[in-house]
Image (cartoon, rainbow, N blue to C red; front, side, top):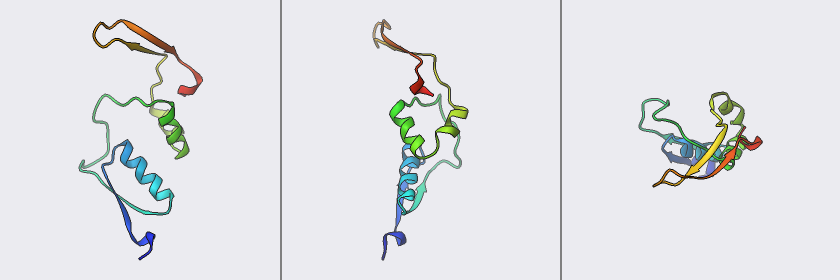
Amino acid sequence: MTNLEKAVLVIGGGIGGLGAALATAEAGQKTVVFEQAPQFGEIGAGIQMGPNAMAVLDRFGLADEITKYAVFPKRLVLKDVYTARELSFLDRCSCWC
């Protein structure tokens, strides 16, 4: 049996599962994704992805499509979890979009 006759099974159709499925499919492996939800869609407030995650999605050829729907903050603020005191900030830079 060759590798193309065996399927790679990916459990979960979230961003990690779909990323893994895309990577294995690009490597020439038959890939099957198992997801319990009846359809894909928004199920929360959203996710935040840093530059490294966007670089991976760009490598998969998805960055342009994601950018159509993404919201890019003008400023990133890091605060102390207990006091809400601002610890650091980062103004929008070219790496965010």
